Length: 446
Image 1 (cartoon, rainbow, N blue to C red):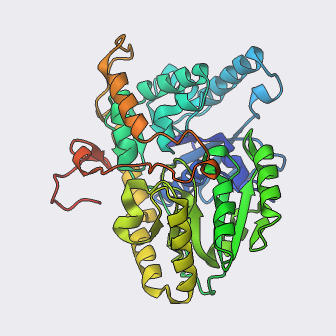
Image 2 (image 1 turned 30 degrees about the horizontal axis):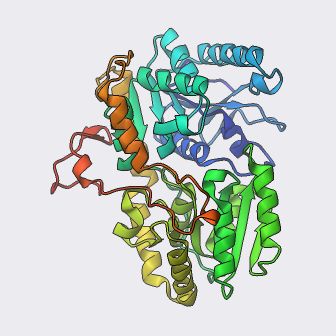
């Protein structure tokens, strides 16, 4: 295959290889799925796009759906733990970026890679865009070591533009970094209206502490008349311990079925038969699982985080405001009314069509990438040096405290603080989808 001499955009989201690998049996994370869908949408508009991914056990295709695949070696720290492995990984990222001729480099998700890719792009005198995937991205010090956090923060500060999915994330970015991000909503793949009867509540995701899988087990125990299915992916450091906890706890919950991880296409069959997609996370961006459910007419049932108050505002499911008892009440009602979800399903699909379609999201990204490539100024950019004891950090801490995950797991604390707050008073002045946000009352996305 002959590759183009240059790309308009290169996406560095290396774990995306798991999504495109032939015969892969585990679904990738939300950040990877979003970038893959976006890259396909841009390629469909004749944009020259590539994905930079880690090699996988099975050989990866050179191109898929019009998107070129640039394969790099697995992370060097897997082979060489410690400082030497980390230094080797920095060098590997630098060589990879140097070998890709792209007008703009985009990195998504929170890691030390943010800083490394930003530095490598700047060394080539190419623009760098950081794309946020989660509210925790703007308070990563709560969950990561200081060295990785410093590299991540450097990358965000070097970014020519910052992309966020929600106004909640925009608020956090403004407070933490003093930057005005561009708000572009997540993309949702087209799907047909589900045609099967709802059979069970569905939880699917990584087995990670912040996802609180035990809260789903507790929900199944509290609503014995309903059926529940859980697909947990063991991809985190705490996954083995959590898998053991979930397995032991589920042993005496006969209405809960634990299912093995499976490719995305097979997961969607489970989504089609779901009463609702259940989310129990402490923090999120805009969960792909909810988007995938809504696109098929399946509502959401969420414990602690309603991104931008979407669930309540659009009436596309139920939000428990952090209360496990209220979550159980809502589950009972959804179970009783599962055969009569016609209007609810229609609202879910209409919301996706209006706000998260391939066309709308890809067009907005395309516009932004053009602005970045032309070096148009996007958002305020403070100096890299932080003022000692300056007010910006204190402001960020106040916002982070408002969005902070609770100190205890849900299974040890009956009521979980709601994550999120009214956002209308914070929206003025943010960049919305490549344009200045229109004043309240104008025709703008909600």
